[in-house]
Length: 441
Image (cartoon, rainbow, N blue to C red; front, side, top):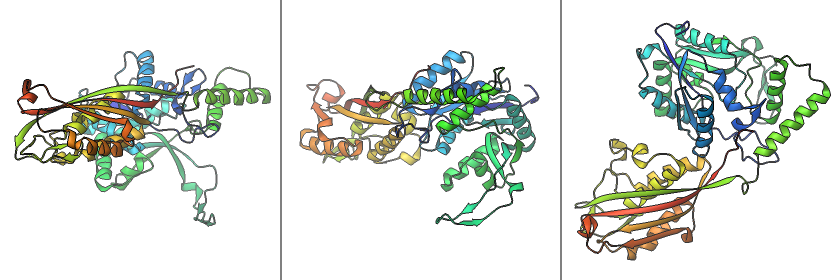
């Protein structure tokens, strides 16, 4: 590897942010990373900047609603690159942790943990220069932790809640941190796992590392390495890109045209919800064995019975099938991946809590359930007396009306394992609504 003999490096590029600060006329229906910047999306420009020999694999946390579009762009532009999309979290820190779990399990490692470099770069910084990336990698290999940044140019004021200035720190010691930030695996994993256990949050990766006592070495960056968070940033980025190409200087008329072009681009992408949504269908199926000595819980309702359902959790087959249907509709795997039966944390857990966790995850990705249609297949017990309460529970958990929750019960006429009262099976179909992402222009 160039300049990093006996080292390996991978990159994490968080791309699950909603881009709330990038809006037009109050609407936010478009991931800002999909905005086009001089012929390419912001996302693609950022990935291409990181496409250097030193980086062997990319791990990209994305929102479920945008996974398909990110995947399409990556496959078209980087067909021979090792790229992994993982589930983005509610906050940036959650997304990075999700990616770190995959990085730790990556099968491509050939060197000891202390010689593994993890580079983290904001997908909204498309103007990063390759030499800065390589310098950050080099410094981190020597120090264990490095961050790119620049000295601040403005005088910084500390202001109270009443907007009265309370202090003016010495400017010569102040830097604005950027990305990439690079760390050895032990340093970064210790920081993130400690923060998770202690419930700490940080505004960037370096701040979490600092809390562990590990020093972070600054690498002098570039003022061109801006983070695009507003339409004005997009105008600035386009101007910087054009200024570095062999074109005539921008006159006032060209700047006006540039502003119009950006407004057109953002207006295309921030459409009304009615115009920019799509529907997805998911199917869920679950089976649990009937045994003595267990509670029988379906749809969050405990049914008086001599037999109950066997399982790692409370074995609520109805809720489990609902979860799988929702995850299937959004391409997010299945319940076993999120809540493995090998994890003691889920031993005997109320499955309603698991559904709430899934709903939080879907809401963060802009996913809204539309309706649920469930079929409970059981010779025993009788489901009808408890069906209404099950519907009410699911409606509350999913944020739907009773009309949008349908539960049917049937037998198999004493055929098969359900007919012999050996178990209960549940089938669920879920319809969900996702906010769609724009295609390349």
